[in-house]
Length: 163
Image (cartoon, rainbow, N blue to C red; front, side, top):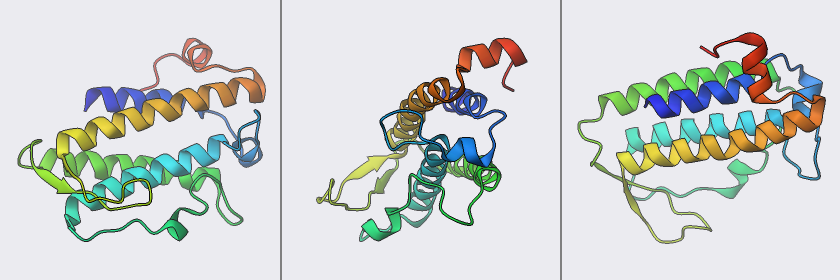
């Protein structure tokens, strides 16, 4: 889990000192925003935690639940999603720590992009979470640099260790 914790810390460094307006602002041709990425990664961690806990062999992803998954909507704040992200990470890590074996098979929800039921090991789910976090951390770094010129590495240099 250390690699995932490190990647999460880097993601949070990228989000340092943002306000709601900055978190919502598009800074590239992409629709992605820093707040949207934060919300998405929070939702993915929550979903994976629940998938491991429920182990529902009939689970399906409902697209309407994902409709605003990459955007902060009216009434949502960056600070609330930042706190939710940290809580989701703690919950996810606790569930992973309690699993009997990383080789346990967990049924994955079907979705339009995954219509056939798949069974992933807890290990594969943890690696997927690492990949998802790293993937979107790269997006976040580019968006942040286009937003105000700040890069994650510069933020590390300015503020020291992310922990």
